Image (cartoon, rainbow, N blue to C red):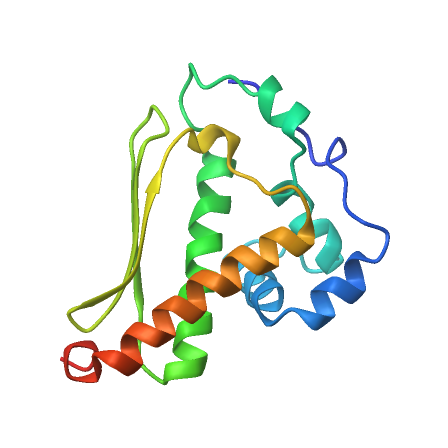
Length: 162
């Protein structure tokens, strides 16, 4: 039930450089800004936007999995998978859709599909604690999932285009 404030999270000093070198992190920042209808994040740095995605193991332990997943955490989960879909679209040229089915208890699925092809599937568990140890790990995990999705679109183009 308790959310970790963005001020309590830690990012590396070289965060701006890490973001600049990671196409996935740039896509994630883009997704956050695109879904900011009120312009709240307009003047925020990319590092500040990604700070809530970074949680240490101690911070994760402090978050209770007993309550519902708060809307801010759901938004981070959606933004993460939308950024993966964007990276797949950029590399394959195919339109991707994201479906996240998340129960109030923090369990569910994240699916990314193109045409009739499921390019990424992930089981979600304890979504209340969704986060990564560092910006580097966030970027690596997102890019790894995106590359796997691109491989599927290359291997099964007739299904992905259907």
